[in-house]
Each structure stands twice: as C-alpha cells, then as structure tokens.
Length: 121
Image (cartoon, rainbow, N blue to C red; front, side, top):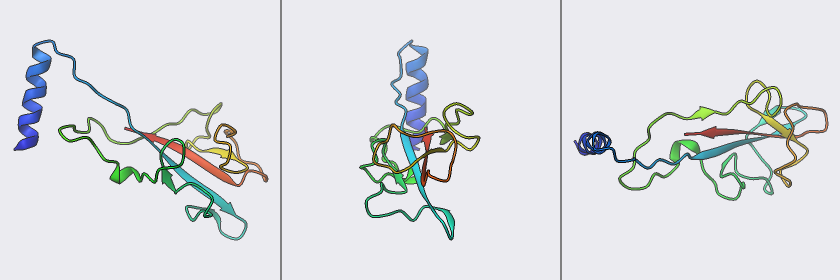
C-alpha cells in the first residue's frame, strides 16, 4: 500500500509538470583468471570485491545496493556492453591487474589475468 501511494504521488507530480529526480547506480563485477580453473569470482586479498563500487573500494553486490528511503527502482539491472571498442560481446574489459582501473581493454590475451564489467540501474 505504501508503494501504491508513492506511485500515485509521483504520477500526480508529473501531471503538475514537476520533474522527478532520478539517479543512475553502477556496480562492477570482477573476476580473475586461474590457469587450472579459468575465470573465477574468487579473487586475491588485494583485489576488489567480486561486486564493488566504481573505484573498487566498496563491496557492493548488485542485489543489495541500498536505495534511499522513499525512493524506488524504475528499471532492472542492465549490463553495459560497448563492443567491440570498449568491451567484449559480454561486457567484459580485461587487464593485467586491478591496480590501474583505467588500463582495461576490450579483448583478452594470455597476459590479462583480470576482467571487469559494469552493471547499471
């Protein structure tokens, strides 16, 4: 009932011409490659969490992203795919390590042991 009332208030606000505030939330999914087992969400202690904020410092699993009180999600999580120039066809970007977050590439090689992809909502 509380959500229904909030939705009614939002619709009434739109009818009056008010602008509703929205904010995009981003989560990053990270994995490491191991020779015997392949890609895995089991990362090293120095790596970011398998699910984290953009800078990798905040553990942020997408199913548990907090939402401010009184706000509601307007869409589901969406994988950001920018193939072929920024990601592969599954949204992954690859790097040697997670230290330099700006040194990711859209393709995997034998020397790129970590990968990361971005989800937004």
